[in-house]
Image (cartoon, rainbow, N blue to C red):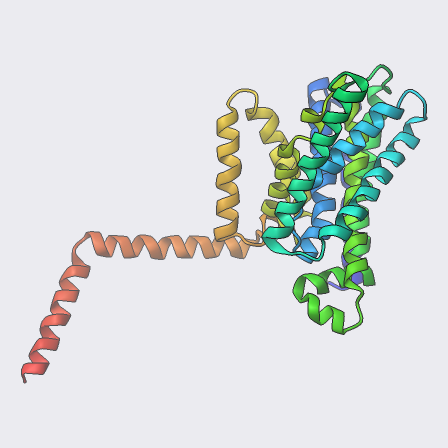
Length: 342
């Protein structure tokens, strides 16, 4: 398929998924809508994370920080500003912090970058906790004015569509190609004239803006928020795991994995949380070992290859367990000895 045909296909798929999401409030129960909100939250977080981190190979653990900043912006401004302005300000606050954070740590890579982004997330969480206790005399915020459920749902649908559409568009721009070049070989990208520092900061800020907007929108699901809730490291870790298992380098992988794991989380976390975490870890290990491209790389040929490998392994085991392997090895040693003696 040509690039234009792929673009049309991706936009049609996005249009179809958006139609299903918009039709859901009219046919689904409150529980299903709650699950749908969680799905769309992780669709936005994982798709926007993969848009930068999947292409540049920078492992960011700061998603929870941007989500929490957006949530606190919403809690502070919701009673004084229109809903759409609260979402925009949440995104801008998170993007502004990402610019400062990126300017400080984006010259690092690998484990150092991951650890520092996680450390800065914890620093922001503890700083807000200290401010709340010292200045306001409380630990969190009560949300007195919240929009209607339909407004929140439509906002999340819009953010999910924007996140995927932005990823579709950026993959076809020079900005997206520059991020791919940074991920492949950053020094070579610099020699080709790419301002890698600016590109990385812009990409990091774009990811943060989506996370901040989602935090601002999803904060109204709680009547009371505190730093432990909205700066929960699990939000950032699960975003990374979803993107990696789905396929961080792909367009639809994070979306598919976000839906699967959101449903899995809502089904198992409250009843058997240990089983959910074990399933998440097991799937991550299996994906790294046998499916490095993520769930999005699954093809018919993949299953055929697994079937062939499994059948060959089983035949080898049967050959070993039957004793034929030991007898053949002994016979070969005997024949080699006879040749040497001759």
